[in-house]
Length: 134
Length: 142
Image (cartoon, rainbow over all chains, first blue to last red; front, side, top):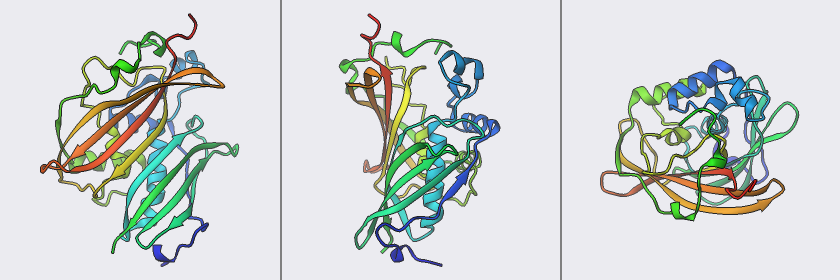
């Protein structure tokens, strides 16, 4: 398997595809204690001007985190993980998490992150610093 | 928080900067991490998912009910100074790191930066996790 050290600047990371469900949003609320009705109640979300309940931003960020940790494996750790939530994600959207190497030094890889939906809208962008084990 | 209460009715201003919760003990429990891993849909392998620290909701900042309904979660920035492991004992707190106003396409909006910091038992910083929350400005509609 390819080592993290083999990744060069501009090279893409292995992607992660994800389709959130109503059930997963409910499970996430229960596991985290975030019961904001905007995530759980379609009528409430519509009153707030949305088309229906929306997925927790942190659940989308967690998918990006899973993409990174699957890729990093035992070779390093996530030192910095910063994201901006750019668009609402709704249950059943098809989300693709992707990334690429922006810069590298002897013990750090800096990655640009992006998640988009099936309408090709960017829903999340971000940056990660991966610290390699020496 | 009452259902239907909107951020426009909540006073958010610079006076909140620096307010913080008490330092609370935090034990990274196997059961909590396993449940979190299951909820986000990953295989649990004793590692703590990076966004797990975003779920620490027990620390209450007196007088600050945030995030309030109607606020948007704009950004999340997590930094680890060392890895977090199942079984770790830490202390953590929350504070209002910053409050500022910006004008943009959507009019004036207030930004609140809420930071959660975790320390090991020697007092060394282990992680910092900041949420940027966005609310319409309190002047809006007046």
